[in-house]
Every structure is written in structure tokens, then in C-alpha cells.
Length: 483
Ligand code: NAD
Image (tube, rainbow, N blue to C red; front, side):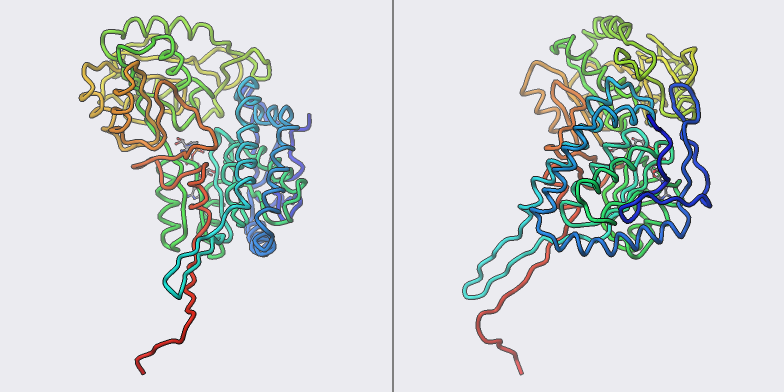
């Protein structure tokens, strides 16, 4: 399989290269080997992408929603046909095990294209009768949208932003994370093969600087970022200075609350999904696991046993269920948090360090007896580190769960359904789970409150963030003016 991309950028329906940009090495996280190079967008490349998007958007918006939707649906089918190839690429880009990528990455991208493709024909306005007169509304695209991605789900993020944007008649310039530049190029290629007109979906590479240039360009009408809170604040401020629309999908430190009446096996399964999928590099992870005191030791014992069943190894081997971190940098950040956990007195139940093999592998790590003031309980780690905290009462755990700047997700495990709904009702989070964790179907809105974000991705909600409403007053009789 050829890993080196055909060229760094995809603009105006074709691959475009400009080696004058800063080189960005593509590193395979499972070995640390350089498997390709792309070049950051130069000002000329950014100009070309924006001009191309600006021109193509008018053509795309003039098509019927049904025709746009048919193309997106075709792209979804093509992604599913190429799922194997795209999943292998996702594994090379991120290091995530093929066992995961074949199940959730390209497939969830296809889900988004199919879902928003299906909605495209139904994006209508309304008729508001006012006696003889009336108002009608029209749902219009915003124009040129910029998507900026994080490195944990490169295919999914490229599709989750592209699908609703394109369904509404916008054009997109997408900048993947510099850590995972490959997958979005494939998404662009497939969209164009499916019939998206040249220039409607463009990909440019680069670091924060390129993202900043896009966000500040007056031709851009909307910015959708998936990234960390500090980057989100910068991008939000820059977008606000031009009064651009934004969607911000940022970080989290989400609570997962396990009551003593919960099914322990399911709760352990939920906690594993909430902390170790994608080696813990998931924004919505439930990394503060509050366990009611009576079942704490039973929970920890089963957790340690089940973690022993993790198959750590070559991510391309279908049996592997736990892979490396996406980059050496992220591995070092997480190692720093593991050291902090030990230093600040948390009890190390398992893991706590590197795995001796090439690449950026860390052990699945669990700390118990964690207190609210410890660094590992307050800051987003973005790695395979679970913090287990004890609690006594419902009221206490709700207050402690909400005592954070973040508000992306929250989960509750209990066999008392009234309590499940009552507790979730009081938790300050955007994407919540009862007796489950980390499900993200395209039909459900996804996004955070507080510092975890602004706006929602997926579901019908996303349409409101990629379109605007024009209202038209129609007078049927004569105009009465004072003079
Ligand atoms: P990051 O904030 O470092 O980078 C995100 C993107 O922003 C990258 O493409 C980067 O090049 C770009 N960028 C950086 N500075 C910029 C600037 N000044 N202007 C414009 N663009 C700029 O995040 P990351 O390390 O790539 O990803 C990890 C973070 O993303 C975590 O905090 C995680 O929680 C979050 N995340 C959130 C979601 C979600 O949906 N809520 C999903 C995945 C990841």
C-alpha cells in the first residue's frame, strides 16, 4: 500500500504540491518510522484553496438539495466499499488498532455522509401566515466554511465537518492536524470521485499558523474546530473579531459515576470504553471514575483482571486491541501525568509507564484513591490513564462531578432508572450516557458545555450551525406610509 500521499494538498478537485512549505514528517506511531512527508500550505496555496472554495460554493449551492444529497450518499457508499483500505490508512496515521479503525472511523464518516446526504433535500423554510400578508423563510448556506481537525479521529472529523457543511450548500477548506495529515486527503478524493464539484471540498496541510491564516481570512464565513481548550479560545477570539460563525469541539475531563447498585461487569466494561479505547485519546472520555464506596474493591479487582486481557501489539494485527499513542509528544505528555499521579499520592493499581517496544506505547494505567485536587483529576490527560475516586452520596458526587471547567460528557451506571435520569439531569455536560459510555451515533447531537465547546455536531442540530435563515415579508396589498 502506498502511504506517501500523492501530494500535500487537495484543491479545486485535484492534488496540488508546493514544496516551498515547511516539511511535515508523517510518523507511524507503532514504530516511530517516517512513512511520508507533506508540506505546510504556503500563502499561495491558502489563496488558491480559498478562491477555489469561494467560486465552487456558488455552483454547489445552486444545485438542488436532492442532487447534493445524492452525491454525498454516493460518497458514503464508496467509503464503505473502501473501508479496509481507509482503515489501514487511519491506523498508519494514528496508530489506532485496525480492530478499532475497521469498526468506527471510515464507517462513522460514511454514516455522517449518508445521514446528511439524506437530509439535504429536506432543508426547507416555513410559511408564516399574517392575515393577508405572509412571511416565508429560506434556509441558506453560510458560504465558505473552514474545518480544523485534531489528530485522534482524522477521517471521522473530516467527514463530521464536511458532511453537514456540504449538505447545506457550503464549500469547505479543511486543515487536518499536522500529526495526521493523510486521511482527509482520501476523503477529499472520494468526495470528488462521487461527484462533488471541484473546489467544494479542499484540504490544505499545516500547523497552527495555517489554521490561523484561514480563520482570519475575510472570505471565510464559519470555523469549526476540533482541538484543545487553549486552541479553542484563540480560534474563537479570532473568529469573533470578524463575527464569524463557530463550532468548537474541545477537551474534557468527564465524570463517569458508578453507583453500588450497578451491574459491576457492565460498569467495568463502560469504564474500559471510557478510558482505554484509542489508547485513551478520546475527547469525551470519562476519566474521572467515581465509584461508590461499597463496590470499589470489587470494581477495581474486575477492572485489573479485564485489563490483563488487553492485546497490546502491532496495530495492523486484527487481534490487537490496544495500540500506541499517536505521537512521541503525546506519549511524553501522558508520562508526565503518570509521574504526577504517583508524586501526588494516588495508588497505582496497574500500568504507570512505557511498554518496552519500538513506537509510542504506554501501559493501560489505573490510579485509585484519587482526590479531587490531584492534577490527574483536574487536567485532561488524553491518554490511557483512569482516575478512580470514591464517593458516598448522590448529592456529593453530583457536586464533585460538576466542579470542573469542562462539560463535554458524563455517564452514570445504576440499576435504579429514576436515579439514572435524575443524576444525568443535574450533570453539566453536553453528551451523556446511562448504563453505557462513548456511543456517538450520527443521529445524536454531539458537543460540550462550559469550556468544552460551542455548538453541536451531528444530528439535525448540526444543520443550524452550517446554515442561516432568511425571512421574507410579502405584502399583498398597498403600502401605507406616513407621508
Ligand atoms: P490542538 O488544539 O493542539 O490542535 C487542534 C488543531 O488546531 C490542529 O489542527 C492545529 O494545527 C490547529 N491549531 C493550533 N493552533 C491554532 C491556531 N492558533 N489557529 C488555528 N488553528 C490552530 O489539539 P490536538 O492536540 O490536535 O487534539 C487534542 C485535543 O482535541 C484534546 O483537547 C481533545 O479533547 C480535543 N478533541 C476534542 C474533540 C471533540 O469533539 N470535542 C474530539 C477530538 C479531540
